[in-house]
Length: 88
Image (cartoon, rainbow, N blue to C red; front, side, top):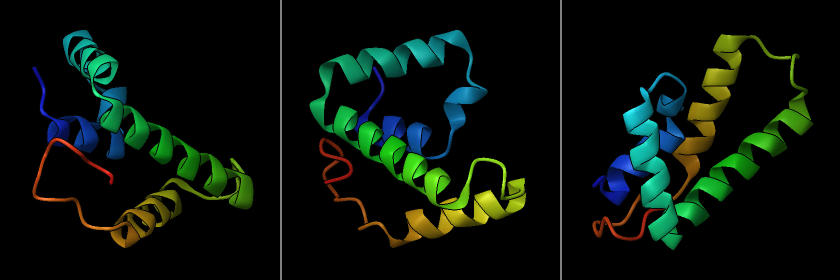
């Protein structure tokens, strides 16, 4: 079973796009059981959607999108020491 910290890191870094089916399944199972990680996943998705709406889907090159994502993630509150509630 994956921890909240592992799941939130996978979601925030887009690791899942290159993950094998077992890793994706482990994240999905965790999300089924953990409302905190589901909320965090939804928040990350909404931030990405808002950024794409503001800047356009194709207007930024890959490096610029990475810098923007990193800048947004750097400004989010630091995660709590308690791994059970990421993104709160």
